[in-house]
Length: 164
Image (cartoon, rainbow, N blue to C red):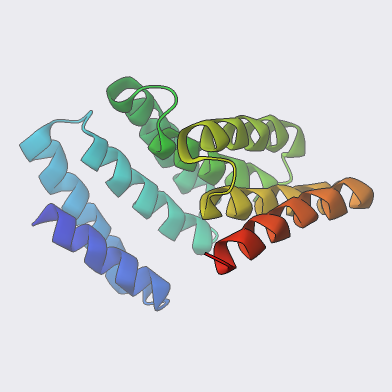
């Protein structure tokens, strides 16, 4: 039931039906916390989804503790190098970038990229997505030359994926 509600929340979020998505995520979270306990990987996914919804709505202060809790749960239950941990770190980095907290965001992007390359492989599409996000930060901090290099890495990964 919770998995279906989380999927419904994601579908609603992707359709920008934010008022409908929030209760879907919240119900999924409540069910998972009750059924699986507060430190389940499923709870971390629910928290991440709700955090992303809040981030997209500009509710950044509400998103941060959700992302932090999702990361902590994922690290504890799945191990520090799991792809879900990296995903949580990227979400937190994006949030910090949006808040212009660049000095906090940059090491998170770098850490997430290290984890993703190790756990998913250097040519995984999630690595390309994280590189693109990191390039955005580089541009925002007036490091255009570095951004161009990082974007080129992302394009190379996407080109490899297209030929498979």
